[in-house]
Image (cartoon, rainbow, N blue to C red):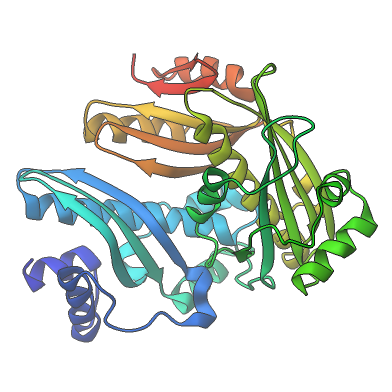
Length: 376
């Protein structure tokens, strides 16, 4: 890719930054290390995709659009949900001008299409200055690292155990750079099944046993249990984070043909809850800690499969979805050539959202317990 094109893509004003950006994109690696103190300004493993008249143009387009989308995710990480409406004032900001570096995780392309996953690192000072200038409350203080133990029980009466699929869902999240960073650990041999059950029930003494096993004050159990009859996955987040003790139980619709669907949403909501709790105590005017942990049974937090026939359709759908009143915390959880998965929160539930989207020319339907969105 010519350096002149990289100047336009990244929007850099100095030759030094443009050269660094060129090195990152062309070599597929970071030329200078990410500052550990500013971890929260990195949005890792973010999916990007675009089509154009040739491979070079497709890559440039994917990178430009990906930077903008990753920047929106960063803002949602830093800003309390009660201030998301204020963040809409920043839609005109060119994210490329705030990019500090990029790293390619994976990529594939054809003569007209480019699909990849990138790590985007934004300028900490630049983003801070922008938010302060706009008067938008935020925090970029990372909480102390929490140890999280994913545990699965396949059916009532069975002992809780590790489950690779449940653990892998957590591994797919951006845990290191989150506002509430998480370190995953397997179930300790010293934790007996009855202790897991007691922790899930909110037993404080059992939580002390968990802390002793991992030699940490901040330990959480992510306990998942499918109910095939009810078609639900029950997930309990219990233990202690940097804010305090927490016991939060939520059910999620589960499709036997795609069990990862409910698990992905549960993990995303859990991480979002932990970040919300932290922001509640760090940002004046943020949501209360109790509100941050309150839930609507999981029915207001949605994981939606989006179907489209090309990038033009995807852009139209995502634009309409993002502009829908009441839609909050909209994030892209995955993107492929003909589909995407997005997570969002809608206070009135999925059926009311379907009615609202229908008025905007979008079709949201329940298929086998999963919500699918497309153009009519």
